[in-house]
Amino acid sequence: LAAIAVTAWFFTRSGQSGGNIDTGDTASIDTGIEANGYPIAVGGSSPLDIQQCGKSIFLLTENSLVAFNDKGKEVYNAHHGYSNPVMTVSSKRVLTYDQGGYQLRVDSNKSKMGSKELSEKIVFGAVSDAGYAAVVTQTERYTIRLTVYDAAMQEILNWSVSDQVITGIDFNDKSSACVVSTYSVENGKAGAVVYELDFTADQPERFQTKLEDCMPLSASYKSDGNIGIVTDRKAFVLDSKGSIREEWEYTGELTSFDNHSDAGMLIFLADAGDTGNTLAWLIDSDGKRSATGDMNSKVIDSCLTDERVLVLMEKQLLIFDRKLEQKKADSLDGVPLRVVGSDHSAYVLTAGELLQISIS
Image (cartoon, rainbow, N blue to C red):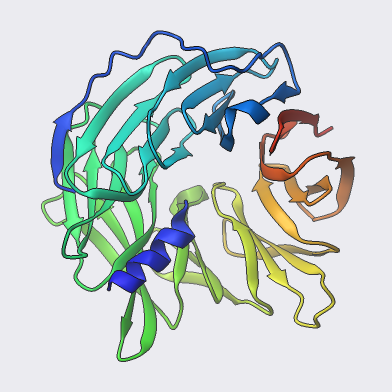
């Protein structure tokens, strides 16, 4: 089970409750970043990640959490003090936690909303628009536990399953339930189970759906309550009752994916013909494979918006419509790390800069 936990830890990159922490860090700090419009030089701050939360772009560095508006002006910052910081977002809140440590915090683009110190090591987490935090922790005996805290950092759910590792979590729009994907190996055979958990019910499990011979990597709510599941071998879309609507078996090795959008999923596969190309699939929220395309080099990262597909390559950002027809290409300098965006602007993090690129 410990070996499985390490596998889940890698793919998610992404407890018993302890005491609340109030660090009083609402005052602005000196991040060493001068934000006077895009591009923003970030190389000296050791950038780790960017995420879009509402209209703000959050930058995570080794020491700080910094938010910028669409004009490239800093609107919020905070010192996290974590040794292995990881950031995840909803459309209104940011969860930052110390992976392998014990502390977490929830922020908006204006202030810190809450924080917590746990007694078990954090594996990964998720956050809802209402500021609820779902945290997967590992006990000393390698038991994996999911705890959900409300916006006041009060525990509202404590859930675990024996001999299974939690690999994905997402909240529904009302913050009343979450979908959870798990993974286990029994008699040498891999398998997955997807659960929906209701925070208001005495028996939280609304459904559980088994997926045979695969490892789930991500679970995410889509439009109309459907659920997108990305695994190492197939992509699934479940309906709101947990029944499988569609499943797509990969034609090559999975190399990258984006499952954050309620509009669908992006899947990138190594070309089975060993051409060095990458095959792209766009699977919509109903589970239909609505578009396919070929990329002629390695995909570093991607982002699906309502109208556009953003694909970050080693030397350029490619912009496609939802038919995967290329609309624009922008050359990049430096080492590309991440891309996020909307239907109007893309934001690219390189090792040295945070860039804004017009999509139109």
